[in-house]
Image (cartoon, rainbow, N blue to C red; front, side, top):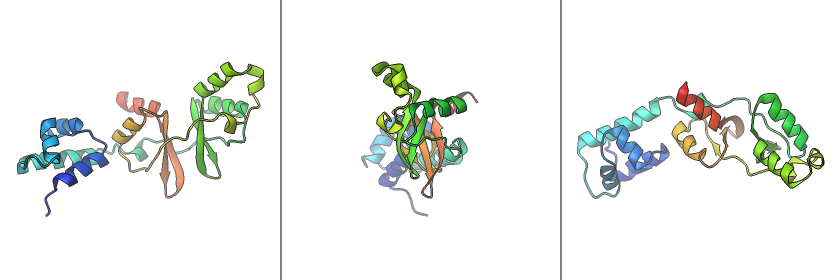
Length: 185
C-alpha cells in the first residue's frame, strides 16, 4: 500500500471539485490543516490522512454522478432554424433553454431570456423568422457522465446548463432545475 502524498491529496480534492473548506468539513478536520498538508508545512497523522481518504471514498460512493441525474434525451435545435422554431420546441418540452447543434457538435445555445432580449431590441413581428445562428449564445460546458455532481454545481453558477458527452456523443444535459430537484427530493 502506498501512502498518499500532499500533491496526491490536493489533486484528488480538485478532481472531486471540493474546496479545502468543503473537504475539511467532510473529513472532520480544520481547513487550515488541509491547507498546511497541501503546502507540505505539516506531516499529518495517519488518522488524519485516513479521515481525508474516507471523505474522498464517501464522496465517490454516494452515486452523485452526472449519469444518475442527467436528462438522457438532449433536445436541441439547428442554427439554421428560426426563433419561431425554437419557441415551439421549448414550449413543447417545457424548457427555458436548449443547446444549438450542428453536425453533431455543440455550437451555441438559445434561451427564453435571449429571445426576450431580441424582442426588445427588434420589433416583435420582425424576429419570428430570424435564424438561430444570428442570435445564439455561447455553447454550454461539457462534462463526462462520471463527473461528480459537486463539480456541476460549481459550473452551473456561471451557466444555465451543462452538456454530458460520452464516447464522442452528447448523451445528456443537466440544468439548474435538475440540481434543485436533488435538494428537495
